[in-house]
Image (cartoon, rainbow, N blue to C red; front, side, top):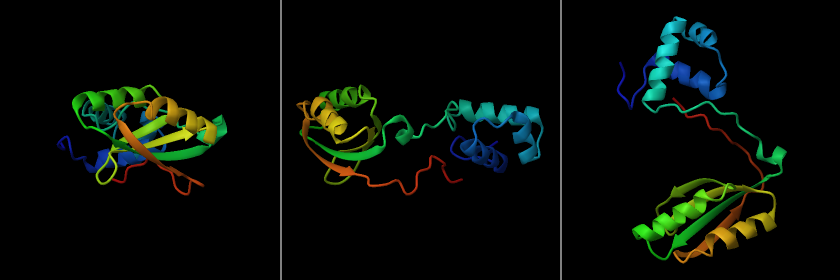
Length: 156
């Protein structure tokens, strides 16, 4: 059995298929990996238990639900103390338009990816959620003109 940070050849094939189509049946997965349905079921459960894969989800096209603007916002903190980090985390967790938050190296402390309706929507989030925080020193924003490539598929 592969360790928790490695996957076997069969697991890699399963993961590749599931990343493209989480609704693939156990029978289809078994046929694609040339294994039994019982083996596939056990391996998928083991991958879930090891935290390699999470629950299946359906991806939504943001533009088709009125959130066609991708915004990347860099945030600089005044302080990196525990209370400041906790307040920042609470604020970004409370805003559903913020999809991803990364702690980053360099001049900025965080990089946020959000999907918003328009500039006014972004401005309200910036003013209401981010710049109101005492721990935030400043922000810089990048507006994506167009999505060229967007995938959630991790290369294996």
